[in-house]
Length: 358
Image 1: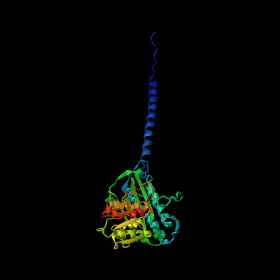
Image 2: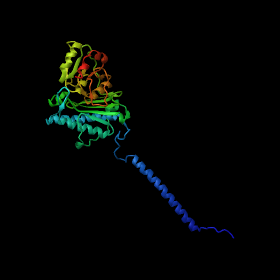
Image 3: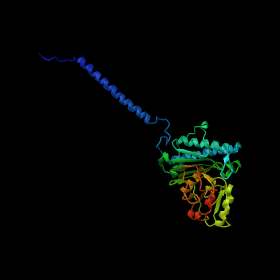
Image 4: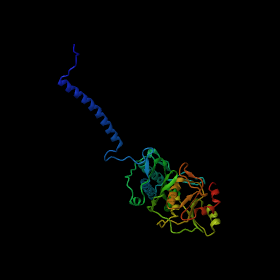
């Protein structure tokens, strides 16, 4: 008996083929849909906003962009400082005392400048650590956008340079010389931003709100400010804090002689600018900047970066480099100079380091 077989009619064959094609279509279309969805999630929508740089953990940030937004932040903060002072609505109050017992002042200018500067920088680089002199209240959060434009002078002098976001710490001083601000000594007032990479200051911005002068510099990059043509090492003019000029004057005259000029001044930013070639009629000139007591890092980081970029030095009174990580204070006092024998200066001031801890 012959074996029995199954025979399909032409119509059955057609139906079978159509079913097979349908299965393949659904499988392949699902694969394509998954790939398309992945592509859409991976790329920003056409015409939509770009992801802020440094927004992802482990991402990179461009130091040239960070310099550009730091300059803008210092200027924007300065606008608030100037507006409050000109409107005479400081609302000054004591926020505590320094180690020397002097009252520290807090004004509306400090707070508004701080808010503007902090949120501008945080919006542009959300993954970067930002340390500020004033507390940032989340209830006062505001959106301050940056269009990612870079000023022409920065474009011409600075090349793009990326570093890991986790290596960056930004230090903000929204109003340096608050005491002088309350006394209407406007020439001393600055707003400052500093960028440190692995604890080393590499970007410094010092802005004078009442004259609109801004100095910026980037280590191994460029700057819009320079050192003066000459300095007096034999009998230097020494710029110091108004609050303890007498302490430095006594030791300085013993070290450099009775002809040594002591310049009392307010604000760490102002004092660093005094060492440079600054085209400001109200800016005094000095050869050395000395501070003999505890000082906060947001006061000195920007100036330290500017001096480093120009070949100068800012160290503790014993010559140690100041690290801009960890605690927010510097215990060892400081001495700053440019185009001078910095080591020799330190060796001539052996007694100041002891005084810095008193």
